Every structure is written in structure tokens, then in C-alpha cells.
Length: 182
Image 1: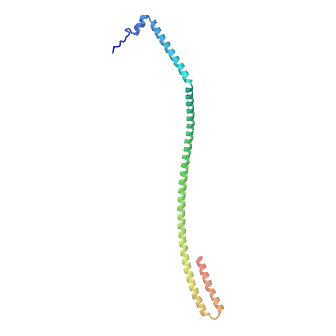
Image 2: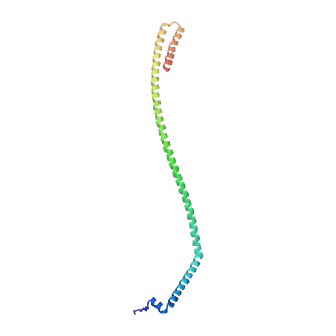
Image 3: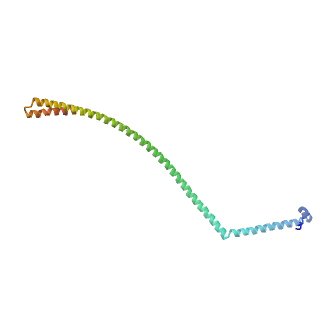
């Protein structure tokens, strides 16, 4: 392959500008500036044409629609979060109510157990009184029977006397029961 040769300017730009008295430099700078302005103008026109194209307008509409949808979704999220906080507060209130009701129920159960114990004690007392009364009734029956037999032995002659003799044991029995109940 053959060597490539490059030609370099042996003079610096300052030397070139000094040599022409600055006219050439000013001209080059002016041309370069004009080229940059024209290039920027062409790029700006190209950008304006692209920006106003149908695809760009569609993209802009899509972006705006996305912003609107995002805003609506954010509003819904805010409402949902507010509803969640309200539901959470309501759940806390419900839990407190449940705890209070459970404590009240426990107190009622304890009071009910106490009442049952009192009633059981009262039933036991009444059972003892009933047994005592039954024993007393049995004792009075035996006494009544013994008295009836004695009266029947002493007064076996008349039937009216025997019917009268049956009345006092009955009277004794009723008096005994009345005394026990008081």
C-alpha cells in the first residue's frame, strides 16, 4: 500500500490573519458565522416541520391523554386511600367495641355464675327445709295415727265419736305444717 501524504499548513492561524491584515480572517469568521446561522435556521425549520407533523401531533395528544389518565388515576388512588383510612378507623372502633362487649359479657357471666351459686345455696337450704318438713309431717302422721288408734280404742261404741276423733289429728297436722312454713 502506498503511503498517504497529508499537507499541513506550515503557518499558524495568527500568522495568516496578521499577513492579510485581518481581512481574510474576518471574512472566514463571517462566512462561518453565516453558515452556522443558516444551518441553525435550516435545523429550526426542519424541527418546526417535524413538530407540526401528524405523527408528532398524535404523540402530543397521546402524552396529554396519558397525563389526564394519570391525573384521574391519582384522584381515584387518593379516594381509595382515604376510604382505606376511614375503614381502618372504623375497624379500630369496631375492635374497641368488641373488646368492650367481651368485657361486659365476661362481667355478666361472672355475675350469672354468682347468681347461680346463690340460687344453688338457696335450693340446698330449701331442700333441707323440705326434708325437715317431710320428717315433721311423717312424725305428725305417726302421732296422728297413734292418737287415732287411742281414740278409736276408747270410743269404739259410736260412729259419730270416731268421726269426731279423726278431726283433731287433722287439725294437729294442719297446725304443725303452718308452724313449719312460718
